[in-house]
Image (cartoon, rainbow, N blue to C red; front, side):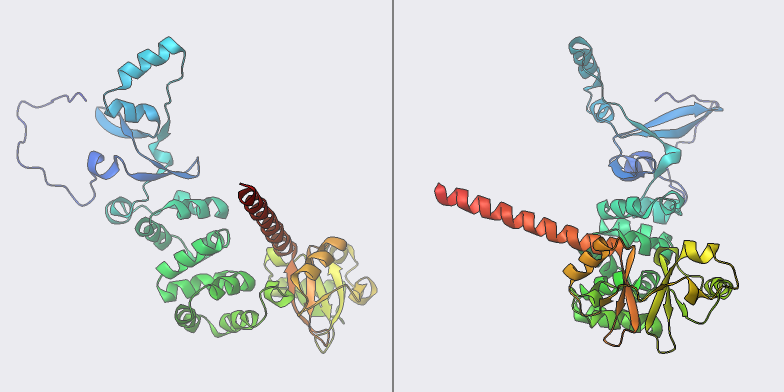
Length: 365
């Protein structure tokens, strides 16, 4: 590019890079970045510099094919050919403000980027980006995010990716992240770890959270106990509607697990269930026993996953309560977990059918 000299003399001493400086060619060209708006990882093919108030500024990165052709010295020929054939010229620029330079050599060391843009992404988008990054770069991003954001993203990943991410973390950090996850998701993830890693991480977890995970690990994976979460809202059967709402304010339950309010007796047995709508519209002095659904449908903790899915589907439940042999409430299976179970089975059936067809075709040959 053109450089304008404002002085009659120039400094020709050897360049020494300062700590807060980056080398555009060495540190940015051909490097991975995150396109925040596009929610994906891309590679930089070229850089765009514009003059702003007498100084050159990096304003955008070129991630399209045109940038690559330009660097290869083929852009002019391609544009001429494209114009004659009526073909488009693939150009794609991303504003520098919408870029997160995730590579650890730049983001974590030189620029100290806090990855604020990544922290604002939906957990599913963040999970997809983390899955595309090299382990070293992913470690830099994870170090900048809080435990809750990382936990939400991990819950959106495939099991193999979850294990890879967790094993790359220090055991103390892995424990903190597991504590932010729902107990059932944490238990599923811990179950996929090798025994030594599992024991090391559980040792760093708070006792209450660790005990919940260990309890869930004790159930068969394909049972209601293996599918359930122990995060649910249960209140005493003797409360009024107003007292029940006050109790909810005290508990401050997670919005994801408050599909229903379960009512239990003195022994912890499931006595009824309330919808939030019925609870809100009821007069404050009305006993909840007057408008709760008595003896609600429930599944035993030993019930198989097929039975759980059938109950959720048959009764159009957002969550199915799970009880022990004494009908004590021990957990709930949410509709998304029930649906996931059916989806996995359906995928397995399709794969088996595909394998059978392929085998028959090979035998005929």
